[in-house]
Image 1 (cartoon, rainbow, N blue to C red):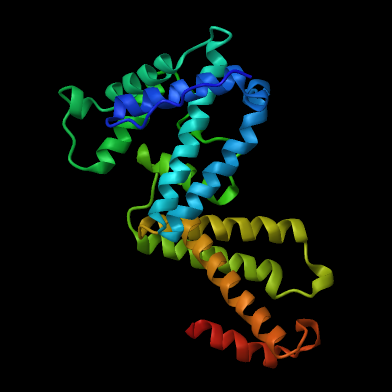
Image 2 (image 1 turned 180 degrees about the vertical axis):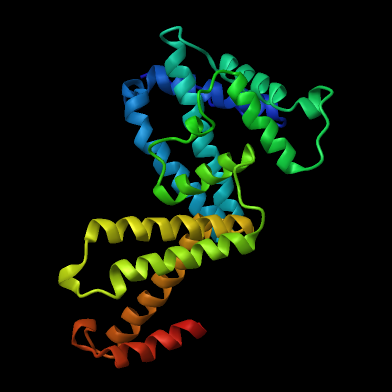
Length: 268
């Protein structure tokens, strides 16, 4: 395998981006692993890198955010390099395409359209997408998104064309309405009489309305739930650690005994 001289650290954005392109080109040509990759084999790795970036952002670890951004950017360049080998498109096409899209969808910056606030910007964005050929405002929501994220995006896009509640009071009333419907379907019936499919439907409606309310009060439901997940994991692992220190197995402890350590974890 030929030895290559690594391109030196760059001092400006253009040179740094060119350095990445040069490194990727070399790896694609000479590295046995990189030579075998396709868009399909990279796909799951890209998803993993995106989640790692998300974790770093939620943890507030900016050094890790920097590293993960580099990993994601490397993947994007890799896809473009693969496409260039079949003359489908190049990284130049990718960058020009996104610039053209941003310019076209910001007529209040690059044209003579006037906007009052960010909601006007969002409405214009969705209207322009429809003019560009989208058959539905919701067409841009990927089918493979996690359901919680998908619900948020669906609601945001509907709001972009004016399909929304007037204020958060109305949304909270909807939450309470959905909660009552779920309770009627599940909580107030004998277990044997429960229609699980119907109960699941009502629970989905309740979650959807809660996500809607979160949007109205500027809470990202995905971030909120993930922070709770992390908090639970931290406290539960504290519980496990303390039980082990005292020679106890969780399965042999009472809930009251576990609660002692759980309450300690809340103060850590």
